Length: 247
Image (cartoon, rainbow, N blue to C red; front, side):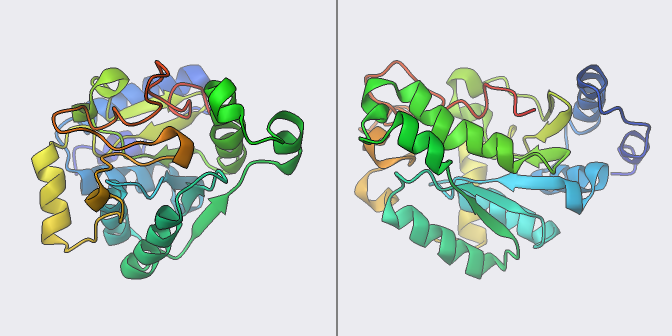
């Protein structure tokens, strides 16, 4: 990490253009870094008070949360409670919070006014899933990230689709976005679970490879892409929090 230190300690800009250049420089410095080194670099780059981890507490979330907890259990964790989550996901959030000693898990909900105006019948997920994701995920996350200068997420390149070429560090408007697991293979992810004795999400045993909101999550058949069960038949692969700028 000594080679990264000059980059982390350099002059940083809060403008989008400045963050683009800073993200590219950090990405080059961290190209061969481990997930833990990337989390440590993110913490050093923006400081604990300005760094958040965004977690769905889904099927693979425990690996990143374990890495983060090993670096600093007090890094804030933002969890989007959309109002459509499985009870198993809410229970898993509580289990991992206790197990890993996470000290600042923030459950963020959509605005009541948005739900009353646009989804009072709770059918928006069917008629307009993109809009449903916006009011239940994108807008709440934009709101939750306002105090932060950087955020960490758990996307991996092996997940394919739009995630196959994600960088280690990217600019998200005037905010830095870190992808510590970008280079991790499926086998390495499974090894983190095994070596750390991490519990699986309760729905994995029922055939769910990826878990989001109840109406838009289904079991994946053997051989299917792990995210095939998300928004099945909708021609949609992302909720928007990774495709819409958060600032």
